Length: 286
Image 1 (tube, rainbow, N blue to C red):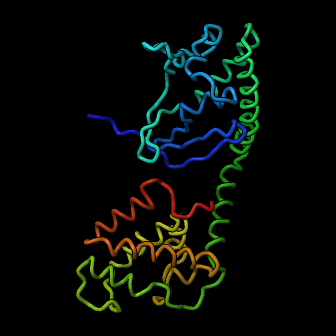
Image 2: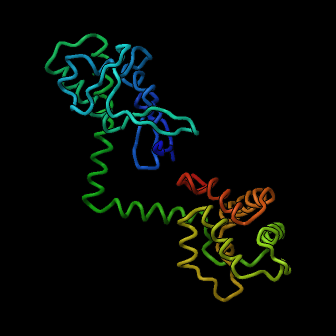
């Protein structure tokens, strides 16, 4: 049975690494695409990554787990390479920490060995990468040692909540369109009026609407903004500029999905796949 391959949940580009694309997988790995690493090392596409690691004056400084293997075409296959899914396509990747060990190996070799001009090019880039990571690393170490890491996360959460929420409870105004209730009624076989809705539809709203806009926002509303008195609704705590707009846009996205579904479970599956399965919220401002 074929094993399930990890998939990308976030991606970006490291400009300081010669515009190297980088990815975070759903198993927590931070990786690079193997095909991009030659350019990252040399600043140009020339040769294969595994072949640069196979040089005898480099291998002795590599961790044993990273010494490449040979194949029939004499192109060395880097150990530690992993397969992952990028846009439903299988790609070969290389762990970011392993890549930094490769950089360290070239720097150490440069101190003790006679290197070729191509290898010296790699050393120049490797030194830049190590220095860049060291600056980030010392910041992270100090944040952890001082406890600022937790404070920073709390500040980021407060900033996000401030982005969505109003300081005062807004007056009620119609925010959820009747079309959403009509679709809920059709998909749950509700025979009553959409203006006399069953209580469990509130759970559908939390699951399909608020949780998908932003989980931290949904959690805060549930824990800190109870709907009391009974006529108060969560959306009355959202500000006009960002909160209400994000809510309205998402509602109509769900309505569009609902129109193509034949059951509420089908709608849940579609919404989860679109907004939750990749581990990211709909909004990526933070």
